[in-house]
Image (cartoon, rainbow, N blue to C red; front, side, top):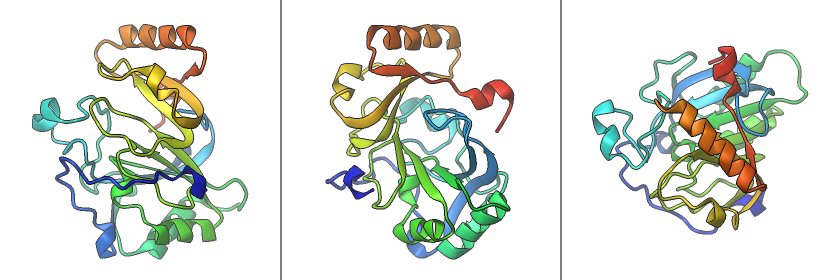
Length: 233
């Protein structure tokens, strides 16, 4: 969907991760079959592909306080997760995704996330997944432009960062975040606007804040992390 792509490039700011896809190898933290746990596509059967590395945080706890994104609830460091590893080229990784999906060619969905997937995701991998019948969805922080040909773009903006990907299918705002004005985000070109309570020590307060935002601004819908409720990874 080329009309969803941002027109401007963006440098990698504050990243300690070198994208390995550029060298022909993909570093994958984990890859497994599950149900999508959040957002508009929640409940859909999907292969979940998490790339290692992020441009907003190193993933090390000692760096969290100074990171551009300091509330991340995800382990994206290394390649030691379920189904993780180094994959030598798009055909090998796409083949692994197809193997995990198993029999059946209808409604194939792969959700690519991170960390920040745009550090490694490239057109050859998107093409290889499409050739195997997959709809390719990404979950990104939006600081890097999305690739052409993606079927679903979910952007989750982080306060204090320059978001260049302001078009897509789904804007998912983790809330509350100081320094983000939801009214300004409503000017961006997305089909769905979701507010999701931050997974933090003050969970009840975050939930109340997210509910309040959705009640006060009807453009927003409440999104919960269903996979955490029912115990899926």
